[in-house]
Image (cartoon, rainbow, N blue to C red):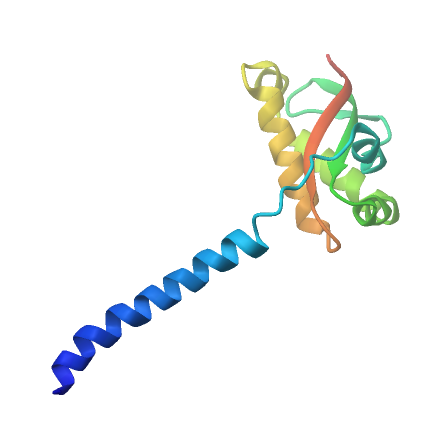
Length: 139
């Protein structure tokens, strides 16, 4: 048999073996169904930020209390250790927002997304997955 005929047979056979192996791996090893975390687990992975009162852009003020959600207690420990950095990050985000930006449709979500991204930038042991507003007053 010449090399061309061999390659026409060998290449499709190799493709079938590789694709079959990948499919078997996916179904056997990565298809384990993970139960969603319980409410108790989620609560144990939350970090409550102390109440912050600061100026917004312009002449407005904000008083806010946040809870940060993570997927492990390691993040909670790091947030406790980085409490001063955490407050600085949140205040930095708030100083760059105006009351009208926060009160606009989607403004709270935008603010929470900014806080999430900036806090995750300082973390080394994991990431936060959500920011919850416990209390917020804008004047």
